[in-house]
Length: 581
Image (cartoon, rainbow, N blue to C red):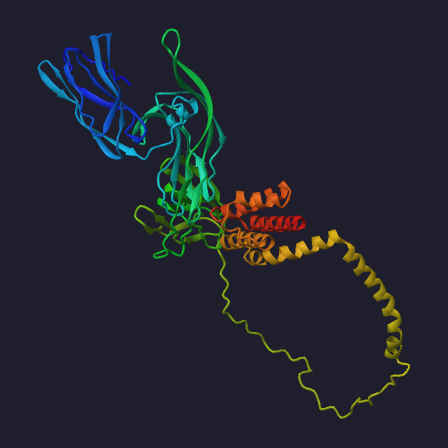
């Protein structure tokens, strides 16, 4: 590659620059090295001795000059270059020494270069094979900002397409999007696809950022980011030229895939963890405010609970506010003003409560505290607000009832408080009845006659029920679903415990039915196993959706009604699976 520098020809300082086509290669590969000087009059060019390399081509010389007319005058650029093709003779970190040239009686030298030589690589019989050229000159790379974040700490993944200047890209299409199992994720908007210059494996490349996403791990342990796959149409040189000397290129369609990335999120520390910690990770401020502090009875005021800053703003619940019974409070209205960018989520999340006082008086709204974990400082922090007071100036007086007061009453005589001792009795002898011909006697006598036909009817019903294969399967499935989901049913209303029990029940069911440990495999693998067992796609989809909901819901606000719906969905999907397995 020629380096053309446009500057004023007269004032230009002479520089001898050395460039290589690659600084990392196999023992059996070659590289191109170019020495270029930016000023005329160069004489006695002396190359380095190329210790540990052999020259397989060159030197070839070229000269380039351009003149550009600008408002400030004429600008002239000049480049004279000397190019060699060399091949290493040993492995290791090798050095290429300085080259020199004499200009205006002064010796100019280039900077030495470092080359890393690895084991010999497999080279096709035809080095100009378009597929081989494409593989060597295009790379789809996934880069992550952090491999060991805390649970709840935001990181980002960026997919870059590196293209060398030896080839051209004509078309790209994503054939398989990356999967982020175990992460809350959101794409980061990219404005256009500007081409940038960068290095890949120490070599110069052009690259564009194809996709960028914010990832927030929702659990600890080993998490995998599945590769992105693309089809790319590439124009590669064939090594031949047309009649006019132009290089002939050939278009090749080839699939590329990024490497699988492993993220190992760390659990949040238990030491110093506040009791009111609710999963907030980042750097936040917290405030509770009143829109009106002085008002009349039945006049409304707003209590705003707001958390702002940077972190997982969408993945935790805000603290709740408690008010005296005399202040009627309504369900809060959630507002989010957040932005997603490479550094995480920033903005504000707030709950606004409407309160309406019923009686005249001064009422205290107790202080509220909010706790979060700061990953940079690696410790928990708690912010507490001050007590708030609502002063109701006008309205009905609140009547207080003294429950300790005793109401005294005079004793009223009814004339029946005392009675005389009875002098006569109304006792009667106990009558005994004979068992023979009694009601019990006739009941026991007829009982066998009644029991026999009833027994015959019950036996027939049991026989019909045992022959009802479909019905029996359904009843067994319902019984099995209740068995596995019993623990989750006990935890209804307790969000995190309920969803952990629900997810554990689904995995235990599959373990019992299939004889495999499903808790350690991905949802895609579970889908594949169920498909092999001829479970219909609708049931598989429902099962995976319940698993995903259980994973996601532990870190998002969920109501008791939603938990009940998830429980019924899980029960139904176990019934459907059991009918097919």
